[in-house]
Length: 262
Image 1 (tube, one colour):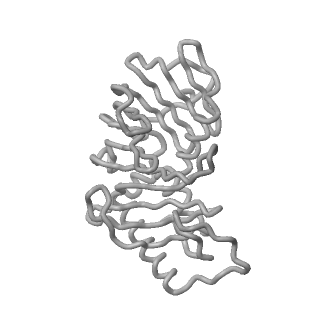
Image 2 (cartoon, rainbow, N blue to C red):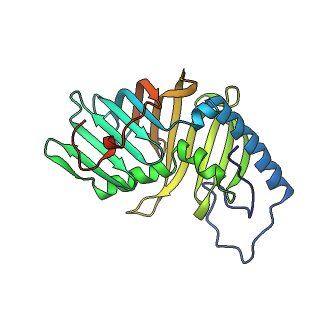
Image 3 (spheres, rainbow, N blue to C red):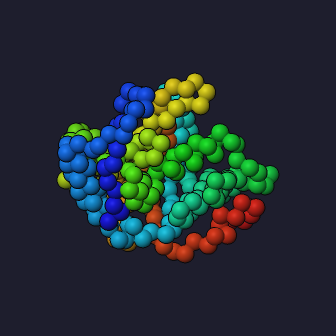
């Protein structure tokens, strides 16, 4: 299922930056054993999420409430109700506020924000941040990264994450992009995902993280109903999901960037 293997060893996430080696290195027996152990844990995680039911999700509808936090991690607002429509691989629509009159629509690498003024292109910085988060999303890591034969896997042993015993797995993709998963050692459900980016203005390294909690079994899929985002260990956003429906046949018209209609 979704084969990935060790080739030339790549640096792990958050490791000191090194100049490129003069010649390719051969994977050591330890690297290969680590990759096999990592793959075994990842296979258990995919099975725990629902196996084929999870992998065959094509679209999704969510309802819930979202909260924002300031640079100190303090609540910046009282939260807002939201309705979200999502369609694999690159369509997303978020309708916010009581009357759902603030709408963010993503289609491929473009996005519009829709207000009472009508649709207009999303701010370039906000769009770049969204596209980056999407490329590191759990769905993309499982469906895209893990089927790439050049991806490197490392089993980093057991640790504590979200106050639970966890298996730590590092996944290194193309261009040395890395993501680390913390997987519940008992249920094998994902607890936390971290990756490192660079601040476009300062060049400083920034650790982005997302935690998954309060799982519910819905349509054969283990679904986290509380998702929290962090930046350098400071909470930035939290989403509480009250209802989820999978594979309802969400139409492409929901993601038409020129339409403001719901």
